[in-house]
Image (cartoon, rainbow, N blue to C red; front, side, top):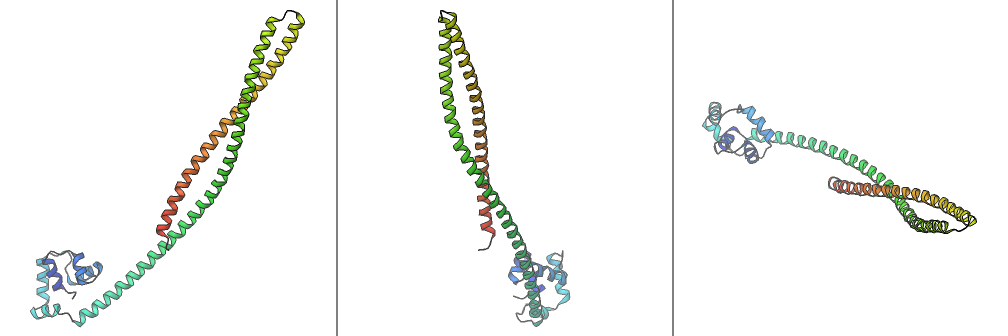
Length: 233
């Protein structure tokens, strides 16, 4: 289809927008805007554009402008399309460069995530080892509780023997036994307290590491999905 002022005015009289007119004429909106500036149609109403066309061309010239084989229009269209292709090529090259840089940045970020993930896996393995040790500590704790109960019973029994002692010698022996039991009891209580503190600390560290692992795993999966979308096959 010819690209000329007469056809443009005809399209505007039909109520078409510039974007639709450009599509009908087979040119870009940028080229159409250049044409409008050349024709003096910028910021003009339809009636004003018709008056401009009427001043510049007679009826014979208007018919000729609508003919499909005007050499001037063909040459002009050829030059415009060549310019448009060059612009598209430059834009495509720039877009490809931008995409390559984005992919390179994503690859670097992904490599950093993989490195962090590997380090996190090592930490998780260490956490598993700590969990195993924690289970061992738990068993030791249960053993200490059993000993604690036994010592309590021995202590109570020693007190009863002291109360029932009939002679000074018996009282002295019972007191010695009671003191021994008391010292053993205090020692076991101290060990029990230390073991309990270690157990609480190990539980807190293990829970924190597991939570961090889940959060990083989720971030890794999201980044991997996004990378697959933007990276070329």
